[in-house]
Length: 264
Image 1: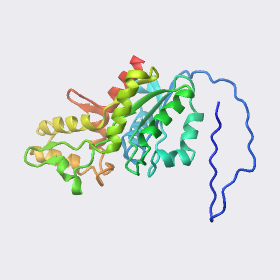
Image 2: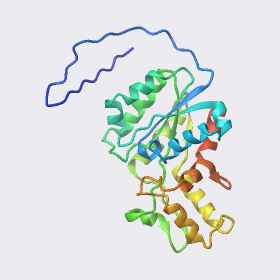
Image 3: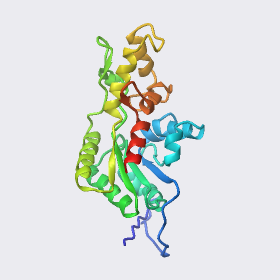
Image 4: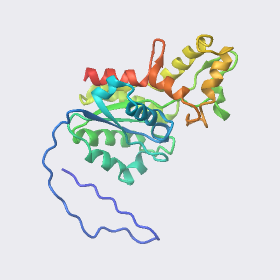
């Protein structure tokens, strides 16, 4: 029931809209296989990130159970935050592709700026997607890489990771998820990435001999060297695939998504 217009122009000229054509569309029907649209920044969207890698692996024939349940769509964009993603019509593109029963998964937003309205913006994204017929999942951020001034995320004495994010954007995302779980029937659940990543990495290090390393520290360093900086982990697939697959009793991203889709 609303039309959202945003005009931009270059070279200092005043932006203006000279013509708008509105065409009514017939109501959409649910797809035979639902889509899961993921909205995030480079830490989920770029080459080597978990979402990019997941889509590539599905195309190779892996994760067949997930592939049978849905089509995973990487709608993330590097260098964006909730405001610029919206202003550049990337949110509009996702909304226009939603059919009833599709899922919009939102997370990994905030490293490129939060704005004071981050919580309000996140809720607006959710409300908009739901009005177009989608169900909602949220996810926590991937952990900080234990490099540079974030190296404190790895304790060299105990060879353990504690690098999940305590940043405001992750805290607020968790708050919104908690609020929605109590009041929103179209919200289907939360995918825990950051805290689980610490548990997964630590379990992998505990099994250093089984995994072919000479020491716990060597196993940990194999994970740390995957990170090109504290945000991105594209140097090697180990960290990414551990987050996707989980390790031991610790659930990875794929298992969590499957469980949420099946339950809802």
